[in-house]
Length: 318
Ligand SMILES: NC(=O)c1ccc[n+]([C@@H]2O[C@H](COP(=O)([O-])OP(=O)(O)OC[C@H]3O[C@@H](n4cnc5c(N)ncnc54)[C@H](OP(=O)(O)O)[C@@H]3O)[C@@H](O)[C@H]2O)c1
Image (tube, rainbow, N blue to C red; front, side):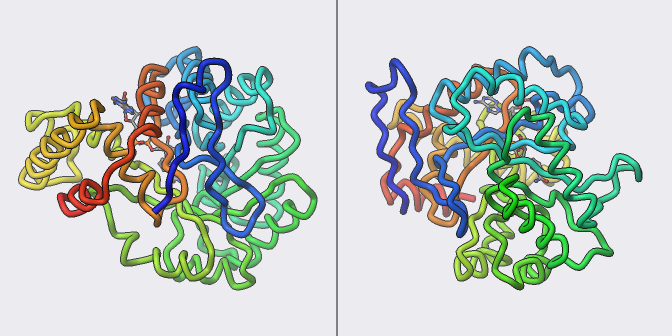
């Protein structure tokens, strides 16, 4: 289990950054808590977002000990990267880990494109929007149907050699696709859907990732806010993925997590995030946020040390 050495009292001047997580076989290191930024400028995906809130969300992360920012071309068709690019000018770049992604081709109805030329152009354009000289982790956001996976990864390997990116990732790849992509051992990290209520990755890919020193970053860790504990049985309609029975059970289980949370004087969201942080199968957890207050609150999960009994109890609840 990872242990987090974190002293909130040393936090007043500059956040103490925990760099205990190594990304695959690359030389990128980061803390176990990142920030998901699909609600930073992601106007094409969510209604009612304000760019100022997005910038404030990124600042709140960097001011509260979170160094990894997970973005993508797809979040606002470049807007999320631009907002991040603006904000980071006021921070020490060497202390920030930027992860971005591309695949959706704006010249072909946003269909996935893993063609080496397209990926290289995407890296260059992302560098410009992010207003930086290098991207720490670059993911192929989605597999396409035509490009051999090893060819796509080789394109990123060339970008790595050129110093434009530091680690190679794939996202939304099945086990077979990951194996094909990693034929030369060049994949450092996989970002796939995983949460306490969506656990298929455990049986499907965890063993292969571990055997091959590939880091795992789960997306939708809070199940789009459901696992924060802010919803009740009346909200079943907002989460149509679950039957009303399944939804009711999740709400009941969250009330049991609340008992553990209360013992730590923490919120349900902080306690759930602490479970991911303590989970040895997970490298970095990247909860998204709409508002800076959410980030400030989520950052406190770094202070929570779950006992192994509490870890197991949450593990078995879902
Ligand atoms: N690779 C991929 O294909 C892929 C796909 C999806 C996402 N991602 C990445 O994964 C990240 C995480 O996923 P996600 O952001 O979609 O979902 P998530 O992390 O499961 O949920 C985040 C949402 O929960 C709510 N929330 C967060 N903290 C809260 C708090 N303390 N109190 C109350 N509500 C809170 C916010 O939404 P509201 O305030 O609106 O309720 C927030 O936007 C994304 O931001 C993105 O970077 C990647």
